[in-house]
Length: 182
Image (tube, rainbow, N blue to C red; front, side, top):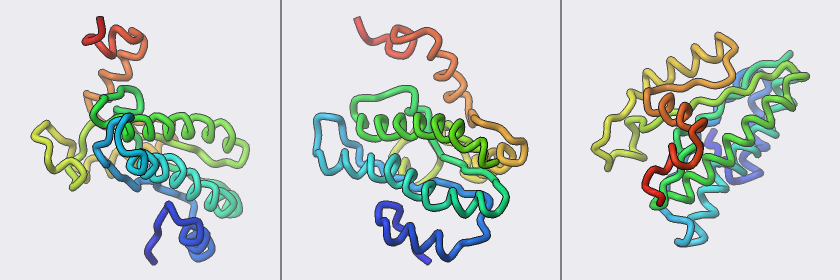
């Protein structure tokens, strides 16, 4: 069954069919390469995919997971949840919103015995970043880290040195994250 996370009917059908779910992996993605002053339709696509789509799927499956005694919801985040780059501002803003959603849901769903995890990573060797020559993580390694995190009841997984470095930079504030600013 195909699932379009931006289509409420598709999301509802998926939850009606998959009634034995205890682990939900939200890993849908789009990357338009749009800055925040660019095409508003591309900006909406990023938010519809990463925030509203992920939220829609999560909302549909929370009753299913709860009815099955609990489980885990895993959100594939990004290092840009914490660090924005102007050229891809729409993607960065959407991932930041998804990170905030992940944090809110992890607190809200704990009493339903549902653990919400987020995985932050720099670049993963997928079609979405095929154009980049920067070092990329192996998708198989990221999948293993995700499953290990679920098994170990983690809340947040930092998949690579870039994620670890940027998270550490959060404590340094704006000058640490954006040294190019005057």
